[in-house]
Amino acid sequence: MSVLFSSIIGSGGAGSISAVFATVIGSNVGAFFTPIGALAGIMWGNIIGKHDVKFTYLDFLKIGVTVALPTLLASLGGLWLAVAVF
Image 1 (cartoon, rainbow, N blue to C red):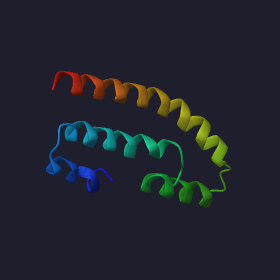
Image 2: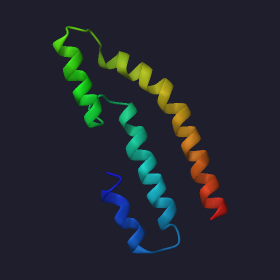
Image 3: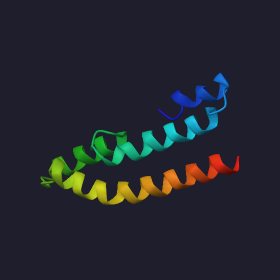
């Protein structure tokens, strides 16, 4: 997704760089909320399934939220600094 939306840079406009950064943040942090949000989550689910490990979507969501919220806040803070400085 990050590569797909990198064409925003070429479109010009005042907010194009911040839009690219916001898209990259969203595409990467969004994978913390579902096990199928990224290829690694799909592969991980397949591996634990083969070993009869019980790990529900709710378990995944609980851990994902604890990681995603601080990451999202830090990322948005960094985006705000990048937009304010540049």
